[in-house]
Image 1: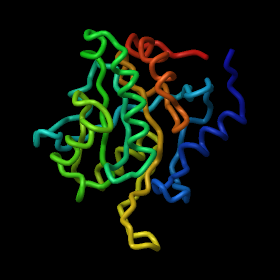
Image 2 (image 1 turned 60 degrees about the vertical axis):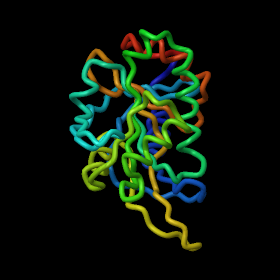
Image 3 (image 1 turned 180 degrees about the vertical axis):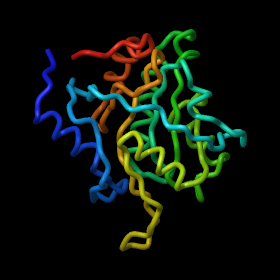
Length: 219
């Protein structure tokens, strides 16, 4: 059984506050609040205080406006903030989710929404996002690009930090962002579960059938 402990809460806060520039191995802390307690299973954190789904409208890979809250209302939804030039973490996360997604039945796939919001909108145009998701994820996944400050505010509202792209010491442009995948329930449109970068395709495959029903996965 999972236990709610002060240690678990501290680990959750640390995980949510830590930002890393993909491939750089660096981290920074961001001053925003997360749930005060949580329960863990091997790949995920179950929040005792779930996050509300952000109110955010951006542009999808077809060049159309996409209202995140409206378009995903009543659907089990996985949300991730990252960027297409990320050399490691972002493509791995999308690939793991895609492998699990392919194991779902057609009716289950139709219900699920997987949304990737870029933290590098200047380079991640709708066309580029679409091409990248077809390779790193799945054509059915939603890619969103638009105003960085609005995206940053939305990320902060669910305990994820992102920073505007900047050049590192080698002159390479990197986007510093959190590595959490948030799972929103179809029952109340709130994120009850957060997956860390250690989550595997098997972890998602095991949990998705439960998440699709609005249930909380267990170890």
